[in-house]
Image (cartoon, rainbow, N blue to C red; front, side, top):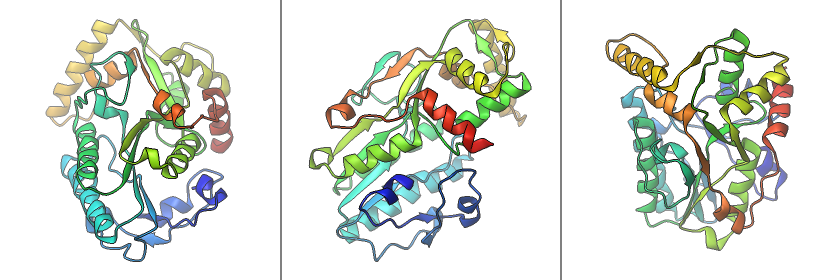
Length: 298
């Protein structure tokens, strides 16, 4: 939002929870212009022709299946139908690289065949399909892990595990592809103004590194020395992941699964050359992003 406010565009923000916006631990201060829930959506009649809509709302991975479907699929369908009715200028959808699944390694390009393995990724792919089939002008961006100032999800989770000495490592070294939220915002603004971006999908990244290097970079900023947690042979970890999945089916809460382990041990790079050819260049390195994240946390 800070990036859009700094541009020449008028910004209207719609969200469900005003209190959450006002208490975000970040230097970005904003308020909701429109309060609405995607499950009960029926607004935006005044923001049609000439407007660009940026859709970033979603129920996150781990939410109950009914909520994932209600918000991510049905909610997006409502937004897209309203956008079509109002003949908006452009619909920008923030999708996710979870649609690719974890079976691929090496370079992941926009044309890589989607293979989501869990419901969250499936609903993000359904979002894309709804938009692509709508006939309205669209651009889709697929970010990887999102970080930067105020991040309470990916970076915060790893930081807490490091601080508690519970960040696992594995005999198989995985890769992390990462985007600073400010770069993601810059990419969306840039692409929204390009005619050539209509009907296109773009991977957006700030950089990539290994799982262990990212952990070390974050630990250095937290002034914590290794080891950060237990180390497992990859095959043993996968067995533990299977046990975790079985426990979940029995109603026992656990965060371990084979999918999470494959995600942490996966050797891939998200190819962003398409966005670069369209004129987008990331501004923040992973190191700079982590510096700013730590400042926003304190």
